[in-house]
Length: 400
Image (tube, rainbow, N blue to C red; front, side, top):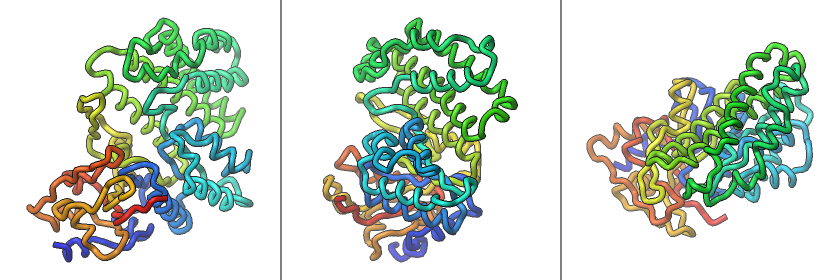
């Protein structure tokens, strides 16, 4: 059996990943089974460099706040600010402290130095302004969108004045109260003010779309794309807050689904620029339904990857990452009857695996699912093998 698996495995590099696919995809999604491990981010960085140099990729998108990511993009494309500022203000989830993320940003800035704008690398966060413990205020996105339009269209066309938005938004801590994640009564998402803001946000986005020809002559394509991002984020956040205030049994399912829907819309937007590498948790990028237990209840929803794949078809490719051990987190040598255990018996440290070929090689002798002793690591689901384009296996993840 190990010999059969070896026939499906190659050393990890961009060329090996591309050989899994019939053609270069517009979006190549590289998943990870856990967050916060620089060894996996180093692998991502290595693959991105090769994709840039060998395959013409020019954008990387990661599972981080889409608005904060604008700070990083400004730095890598034009040198705005400093590297320290980009790391402090350009990442959510605390990922600006990662040495591997810092190296990615440093390398992108160095690569772009002196290059024409059309050949520069771009950085994007594609998550919403959302954390596990709560959601951001819609203030930044709403006011930025209003300001973009107020400077370029007739004031009579605006659905409201900036002061109206400020009054309806109120204090930001009304929106960011972490208690609202588990207690809908603490959310302002279904208040009269929030309902009015949803209508105004919709009108602002409609106005942006209706005046696209004029706005593109008044500003750059990048500014237009940024205004669209503000619109998507404002409407998405207000919708998310609405469901945070809901008391029905579908509340959490709606919320996790809306988060991935926001991700999908952001991914599709920057895919318009050309080929991009995506990096996020496997559950956000896979084609199958994603599942999780939250508050003791099982949740199922369609991931961002599933939504994007349904839209783009063969232009979307998904390569998961599986791993053997994270000993510093209590994840030890996998059992031999799991996918990870079969791969752990191979001699090398890293492989690119042809997932459909591996599924065929396994035949009727399906591995059992691996059980993780640590909540932060999600093992590969053997039932998903045939649906993926491939996966990367990393034998041992060392402490950073």
